[in-house]
View 1 (cartoon, helix red, strand yellow):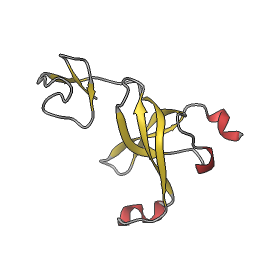
View 2 (cartoon, one colour; view 1 turned 45 degrees about the vertical axis):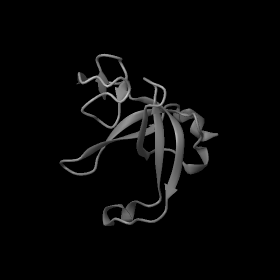
View 3 (cartoon, one colour; view 1 turned 30 degrees about the vertical axis):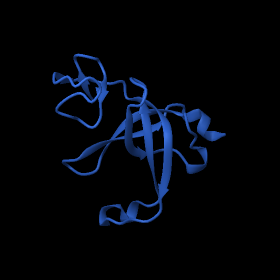
Length: 116
């Protein structure tokens, strides 16, 4: 994630300057890959051919643990819809969509709780 050297805030989406303090000295820094589920919806129709064979799937907004309000739109995987819950702990998992495109998705941290 991009981070401001002046105030320490993370930025997503990347910007040319910090939206918190206006600083222009930004650098890239690794993050933990941990998040909590903020909100989600289930996509049941595809408006783009690539996703046609993949419906239904879960689109989620996750909040990364590094900073309050650091939200990320992503796909939630490996979790049935009925077990989704706001605030659930998630971890990043990278999925290759093609030979040249790999995206970060999120899955539940505690897979044992999914058998409830």
